[in-house]
Image 1 (cartoon, rainbow, N blue to C red):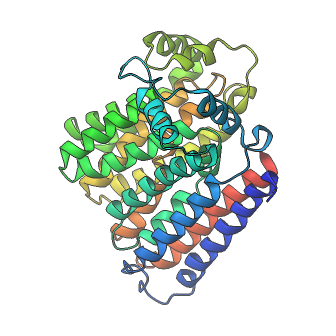
Image 2: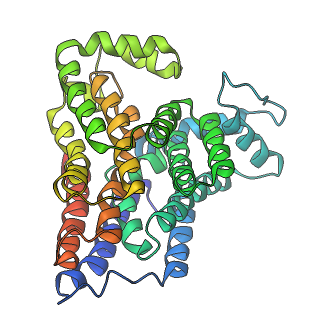
Image 3: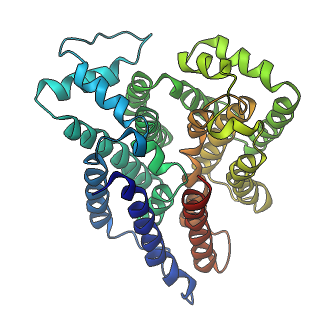
Length: 363
């Protein structure tokens, strides 16, 4: 299969999947679809097949960005070229060395990476939305950056989904496995320090979404007034060496090529509005959802303050990996509207339709 056909094939799959899930909800006379928690095994098999298909993609930098760089890194790494060093991303190197030591080809290594990327999201969704994991997973797979970070920003995407699973465990008071997963994620991509710290703030601090939303709004003002100075300050903290490089690049690219991106700020505001509507406007109390919304706001506020940096999409994903959970969680677990099935169908189709439009015509 041509590498340039992978993205169209993914879009076709995700659109058909969303129609299969969404259209019956639009036609439903009641909320009969809200309690369908069966079928998780079928969904699991879909995720496995999708991950294997994605992992066996051709090694093409033109079609898949950093895939070629990761392949080169894997081929040249030595079987003893790893050490436990918290100043480096040693877990990622340990994964490469482990796969190479058992004789895995580059393609099989990518299959392992994709299985971790997709299945950690699957298990997290099943914990967040046990009554309807199918709906939750289509929101995840239909999100704007899901395909991109499955084939380009591999380490970032995999580490963030591990953090997503860790959040679901920490919220369920399973602290030992949750902390372990956070450490593993940090050892894969150190930028996950941001969502990990945000989770701790949300769980141990104030679980009032209004504070996080106020901080998010203030971050916009800060970015407009002193964006460059704030970017330089965060770069000086040194939690991710790539950030220093990105903020120093004068030729902006990716999201930042036009300066402050109001269009992507608008996109990022949708979960904030959903959180406001559920937590403030409707006054629905759910500790898990409050924490999820707070983590999103805190992480997204960071991205807003460094939005002018080159490759700021790398930082956007530190909040956007939670985006589908913020949208889908109340649709499954909370009674937000009387005709919730129909509104869920419209939200799902609009959500996936926006992703398809952006990938097909804008990017």
